[in-house]
Structures are given as structure tokens and as C-alpha cells.
Image 1 (tube, rainbow, N blue to C red):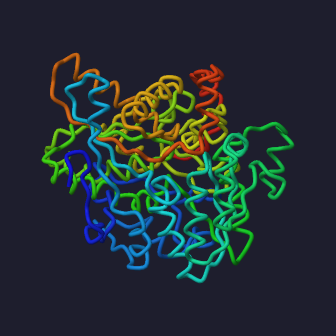
Image 2 (cartoon, one colour):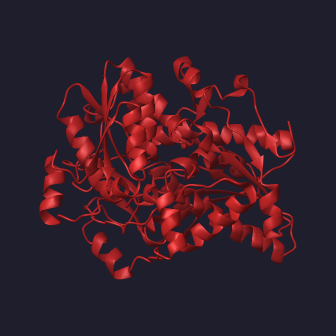
Length: 451
């Protein structure tokens, strides 16, 4: 072990997923059936999910064993390094200690395969050989393409139109692993055709892409749907990140004052932060910071209400922080953060004060990402840059207050397929977007009537 990189052996990969549900400060509100508005039953989800994942979605067990077949694949890149960003600390001139969990070392370049492998495994065990999904920036689509390839399954990805155009090599990556990727909204589904008839130039949204993927899965017996964020079982699978980080920090003789992750649907933030929830409840003074874009301010400007997870209202209603399922954010380059809702678990913890939320404009995020690249050498995804912008602010506060502070953040993905975004930044072609209050009110006016 060096002073800068704290590594664990393959034998030290967590053997169970941590479930935050028993440690919540209040019970989760049930999902509601979109037709009856009554609590959804497992049978309501069986058309698109295998029973094992439905059980995990509704589980109150403190931990769930990770199948050996899943662990066998996770060993390709896990455990991931915990890195002390000493050069970044020097560049900022801060007394703060900055650590990052490097999830960019997975084959797909992000944290997403942690759940993609698990979801593909459980579907394969259930006799399903084809999965559909949506993707924003393409990190999730490429992760599921990888997982399906490893289990000999077909994969169909609906990629949000603006990201489909901005990030062509993400599509190529999916194709290399045998998946089919189309721009959403598309002509392949009723929901896609409806959206195109209303707006032929629609940039798309994750809500629209989810509608298309769910519609296809529900209409084919050989196909299930797979989701890359938001739902309980997805966040559950990501907790290997935080569990490893706790073990690595112990080796380093450190403990964070603040844990930071970018937040679109909640998976990479929760994966790092959730294992710290019981520690915080037990008296540890640790802040959990979820960072979102000002262009899609789900937690900082949204409301806590029941809403659909998709644009067409096909999914169960979820109690969550939301901007309204009709919300279509501008085409910022952090495509993975362009979602109208937030994980119900993250939302509940946010509303209970366990999780803090902040929003950042994209120019400040790119500036922070370039400072990090200049010091540490890593070029991060636009999504991850939001976490780094918050890290810079926290580090500068420590400098101003001349206080020792330990900061931990999730480096959720690399930016190797985001050079177009960086190029536009260098050319002055990017602008900040603060979503207008009136547009938020307009989208929220169409929330479903559910208590």
C-alpha cells in the first residue's frame, strides 16, 4: 500500500449488499399502481422484472448476499482504488484531505456495471434472455450491454436523443458488446411516436426513454426491463462502493467529514453514501452531499410528491423529489443527470435532513474538472464534474477557516467519451442554464393526484 492509493485484495470484495431500508428515519411510502392508485403488489411488477429483483426492491433485510456468479464478474475490476488526491490538495492550497473512490476503472468506465451485472444475472436465472433499457449519457447503456454480453443475453437500449448525438462512441461501445442502441424518442414504440408527433425535434429525456423501454418489455414475453438508477434494488447493488470505502479509510486512518456524489437518479451517490447512514445515526459527524445540475434541480427546486417514473405514466407512482414527469431538461452534457425525479430512498433521506442537496451550473463544473485533470491527470465525465465542483467549494471553505477537513467523493466515471463536451467548453460553446421557476411550476401542475 502507498500513501496515495489504498487497495483491497479480491478476497475483500463485500460479500453482501447493504440495505438502507431498516436504517431509514421513517418508513418508505409504498409504490402505487398507476391505474388504481393502490399500493403496488409484486405481481404488478412481474411483467417486466424477475421475482428476485422484485423481492430485493421490497426487502427490509439489513443485508442481502451477493451471488457467487456476480462476485466472479465483479472481480474483473473490484475492489476499486481509494485514492488520496494529494496533488489536487496542493493545487487548491487547502488543508483538507481529499479522497476519491475511482469507479472509472470498470470495463464500461463507470460505477454502473455494479448493478448491471446483478440485474443481468437475476434475469438470466429467471429464463429471460433479452433486456431493454434507457440511457442518458450512455454509461448505463454500455454497462448493461457489457453485462448482457457476459451472460449471453440480447440488449436493446433507448438512448436520449441529445446524448445519442453528442456521444457517438458510447453507442459504438454498446455495439461492441452486442447491444442495439437507438435514439429516443423513436419510431419503434407508441410512446416514442406520440412524442415525435408533438415535437419532431425533441432532445429526448430519460422519462421518455424509460417509457419506450418499459413499453417494449411489457409487450414481449421474452423481454424484461432493466433500470440503471432510482429503484431500491439498483441502489442496493451499488453499496459495494461505500462498504469498500469504509474499509479503505480505516486502513488510511481517516474518516470523512463530508461524503459527496453527483446525483441524477441517485445510484452512484447512494452507493458511496448509504453505508455511512447508520454511522451518521450512531453519532458520527459526517455530512452526505448530493450534487445535481442547476438545469435539472430535482431536489433543490422540486417537490416531494407521488409521480410517475416515466413520461407516459406507465410506471408505478413513486413518492420522490420530482420536477414533474412532463419535465424535459435542456441538453446539457451531463446527460446522466437529466432526470425529472430522484430515488425514493435518497428523497426520503433528503427530506429528513440526513442528506444535503446542492446544485451547480455546468461551466463551474467543467472548470473544476479541468483543475482536477491538471493535478491528478484524470479527465472525468461531466456528471462526475458536479461532485468535484462541490469538493472544490468544501476544500476552499476549509482553507478560509484554516480547518482540517476530510472529503470523500465518488469519481463515478471517466470522460473519455465526452471530448465533444470539453471541446465545446474550450471553444466557449457551453452556457449555464438555471431552470426557470415558471417552467418548474408548469411541469409540477401535471402531477398525478395521489396522496
